Image (cartoon, rainbow, N blue to C red; front, side, top):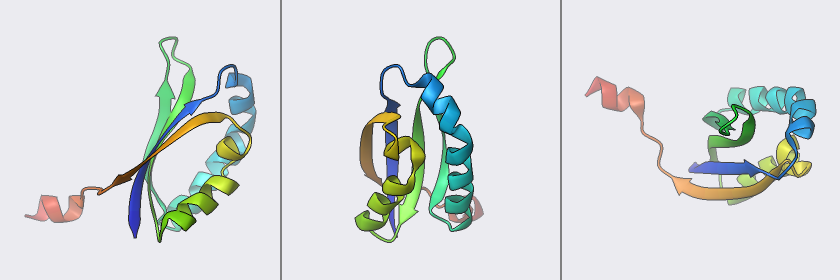
Amino acid sequence: MQQFALICRDAPGVLEKRLAARAEHMAGLKVEKAAGRIVDGGAIIDDDGNMAGSVVLCAFEDRAGLDAYLEREVYAREGIWGDIEIVPLKIVDWDKLMAG
């Protein structure tokens, strides 16, 4: 499995669109988490306390798997995430670390 951090900044002026798509986004996250592809994540918050993007830690078989996820992810598909930075990552194996 390849691991990635996605740093996704919302496009300008999409807060209402983001809120309207949030239920679909969350439903998709449940599917991806159950399949072991989403490790963790959360919303980026702006100075006014509004959601302004997302950080997603994820693991896919390969980059093609990540690209397929982004094609089905509503925030990516609908242009809510205006800029998506993809960073290869090695996520800490917390169970192993804490056992040692």
